Amino acid sequence: MQEQGRAAARHVPRVHAGASPVARRSALIHRFMLSYFERYFTRHMNALRIAHWGMPPSVPGGPLIVYSNHPAWWDAAVYILAADRFFPAYESYAPIDAAMLKQYGVFGRIGAFGVDLDTPRGAAAFLASSREILASPKRALWITAQGRFSDVRERPLGLKPGIARLAELAPDCTIVPLAIEYGFWVERGAEAFIGFGSPIAGRTLLDSTRPERLGLLERNLATALDRLSADVRSREPGLFRTVIEGRSGVGGVYDGWRRAMAAMRGRRFDPSHEGQRT
Image (cartoon, rainbow, N blue to C red; front, side, top):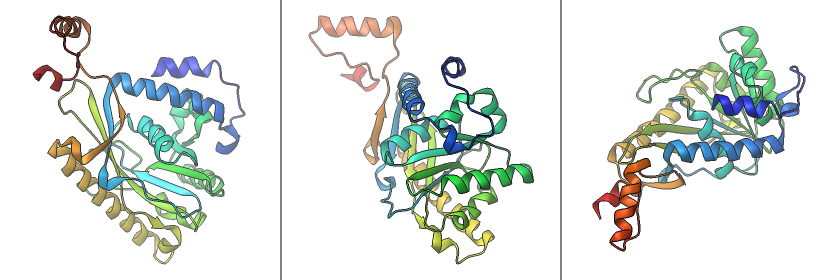
């Protein structure tokens, strides 16, 4: 991933560091990186699955805010792939660690903007960028609201307070929780699981204080996480819809031998673990 980021950066035109997230974003570069992330995902993961109960809600209009837990490095790829699959009409943006953005500036060309939420200045910059993004009804803001990596079982979730202020910037927004979890089932690669929770209209949140809003947003995300975890533990593929399927099997000499044996028997080769049983 790091090597690909450096390679892509060599072909990306430079943009002034003070430019806004909207000004930095390039639709062309976004399409290139989307294609890269999909190829990367299918090489290293077995599948991206969405719970049947957790399909994305319809958005009545106005900007969209999707906030999630932050269990792993793969979350950025899941964001990019899920945004393309489920909200293709929206131009998506996401805050990332400011130091990382300096190192991999190409991500600034696909909607990422640097933040440092541990300082008052960083929090103010996050809100300023969010205000600009949410000014358009066709933009979406994707946020790992915990602001740090954390286990899916951690409670309370400890969401950053900035998530509770976003409705003030865009009262006509829709705010949707997204539960993310990873696990290993029967294949070599891991499974990525997601499920969208109940949406909330921004104007509804404005009737509450900021601490009350934060509590409601945290409870909604925790509810979605608990439901998703129960489905993941069941190991029942029928509870999910497969969004992206990766490469099954072990590969190398072992799968080569299995392929040859299947050909000798006049059977179609199935590289999956389940295929070994037939």
